[in-house]
Image (cartoon, rainbow, N blue to C red):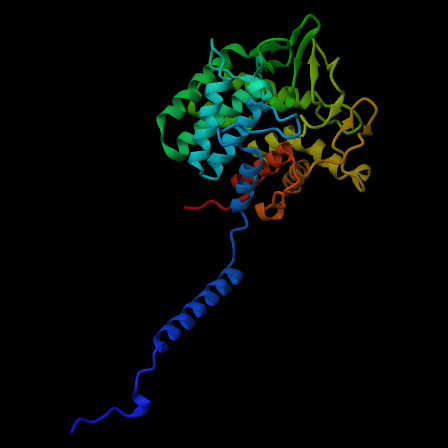
Length: 368
């Protein structure tokens, strides 16, 4: 006679599946707990920032859109986009931005880029003149693209831009070699009009290493001389634009006499290149003064020591925090700078993300 299995030993349908489901939930809960308590890297660049930047400002064809300036695109923005794509290791975005830049902004007779493209009537170049800061940023981004992905065509293109910058966009002044803001329109009978924020010092450092030239040393010396001399107003701040004459420097006629949306990049570039630079002191003193205790102005009139009506952009405040950290010899982390906000403009978002990259590169512990 066959023994019948005991009723309690009969397999119950579905029990193994329930056990697997309970186990999976337990693993998920454990993973979530570990994620919450595990120490995160305070210097990590937030991927959500880059995703939001791309969603709001990067068109599918690779054009970076300046939403605060009638939706135009400029060489500066393309350079910023490429720098950020390299920092976030997003090669697909990097290639899209570079391809659009090359196809739409590259000038016909040299390796510089027209500074302005307007979207009206299908889109076209709005000004064929270059902006040398944009050219520098694009070359720097291409070099970083090469260092990240080891594709030699990036370095080749960067070298072509660098050679053209050094040959065509420098001039001699009593302060030494200076960087022309563009090929046309800045050399006047009374002197040369310069933009201190165009001196992208960390780009100078990296490009000079990759593409040696006897022109880099005098250009850097001239840049530091200008930044140390072109200081105006009560707080000795850099102007957006300055005029260098035969033996003098003054606020550039025909331009707003302010420390503002251009010159905010001066302390960013200095801190990114050399966090110990004494040139940061005037900026840190200003941001620690009683005048800014209750108001962070976007602009400061350097002739009358008065503040403009608008508050500093969030990206400008990020530059301030980096500057103060350098001056106080404090370590600042990326996590201490707020994430991008959905209401931030292209320019504010760019400044904030670039500041985060600078913080990571200058303050993060070096890994073996």
